[in-house]
Image (tube, rainbow over all chains, first blue to last red):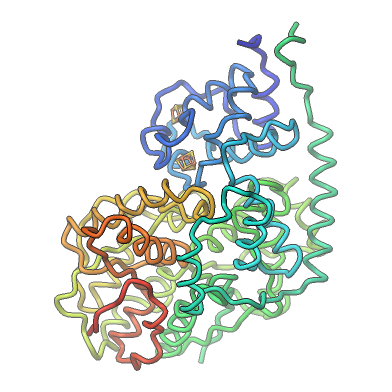
Amino acid sequence: MSPITAELGKRVNAGAETNAFKCYQCKRCSIGCPVASYGDLHPAQVMRAVQLGDIDAAAASKFIWLCTGCETCTTRCPQGIDIAAVMDELRKIAREEDKVNKDTGFANVLKLNLDSMKRWGRMSEIELVALDKLTRPSSLMADVGLGIKMFGKGKLPIIPGRGDRKQMRRIAAEAERIEAERRRMRRVPIVDKEGGE
Amino acid sequence: MTKLAYYPGCSLHGTSKEMGETAEATAKVFGYELTEIPDWNCCGNTAAHSINRLLADALPANEIAKIKADMQLDTVVVPCAACFSRFMTAKHEMDENPQTRADVELVVGRAVDTDVRVLNLVDMYYDQIGVAAIKDKVRKPLAGLKVAAYYGCLLTRPPKVTLAEDPEYPVHMDEVLAALGAEPVQWSYKTDCCGASLALCEQDMCRDLIRKIVGNARECGADIISAACPLCQVNLDTRQVDIKAADPSWQQVPIVFLSQLVATALGLPASEMGWKRHMVPVPALG
Ligand code: SF4
Ligand code: SF4
């Protein structure tokens, strides 16, 4: 196991605007979490890994990509920790540190979803499904029958709805520029397994 | 007619048209005209907040800014629970953190007046229209219909953001259903998450979550489940087809929108309900 450092915790706290160090392992988050039993870790274990600075357990976990963002943990935590925001922040760190877990397709789906709304101003479900199938081989045959039935019911419009595309492009570009700058400024280097002090 | 700003979001223009149509039609019966925010953009959904927190706040903030400044209105109806959650989160984060407000306003390009009431579908009926007014206008009471009120995750959580009175066991939708003459059942999974955001990649997990939710409603005596979120409705409705294909003993439970039940009880024509768009057939109601 890697040396115990506070760097990951500090970085998570800054991004999630919360304090992960306050967790005392009561496990209410894990008990209420609808998907705790489907991943490699459960939420309280993710919190402990963050406190210990174990980036390979926390940011590289599969669980952070199974979290549905249902906010049960955040609602119930006796320490007022925004655990759902911690999961979101770990997803960002996983992308930045090239540690996205390979057993999950959600990272790909989220990225395509954001691209779609940036393209049209609104999200196109049919485009999202099609691009996911092209970019993630394991999804190719998933739900084909169901998709055809939904299409038959008029639930998957072919032509994407359009918002104010110019405004969307401007907002996305500005937000990306400022957010990147903020993240760079507060980024604390994370000590690697071998390179620990 | 009193105008209310209206943010349909991507779902109500696509997969869940029937939710938007019945929400608009029922509001009209009570003298409210839902007026779409001009040229609205996506609220950012789960994707924005898991990739860029500032963008996740700026997208709904840009819509909120239009409500007071451009439309001269102070209330917006956001029927989709996921969009509602993004609107409330943006408001909350801007109000709590001056740095966030400054960054968001820089991105949006103008000041954002967050003093706007944001109503989800349940709020529109419960807070804006009111249970007494609804009772008054019921033409075809849903007598004998046992309904499980399903709130899902984001309508009530986290309460510091949604301002929900009873985040663990909410009752506002149950009270609206009772006003329609239906019988709301007590059950366990009212606010459990159905996993809709992972529908494209974690099918087995979603099927499990849905079996738990729908199965519990059935065990608690519900004939039907009333949803207030388009993502929940689509997930619960379409996945049951799948569940039944793998397990023929599965007894499907129809998943309808609260707005469809209100419309039915008000006596609006069945042809306007969009029943044909459901995957699990809905029996004749009212
Ligand atoms: S609920 Fe809060 S304090 Fe308890 S284990 Fe989870 S994060 Fe830690
Ligand atoms: S937000 Fe994520 S971690 Fe928290 S209870 Fe929901 S699924 Fe579990």
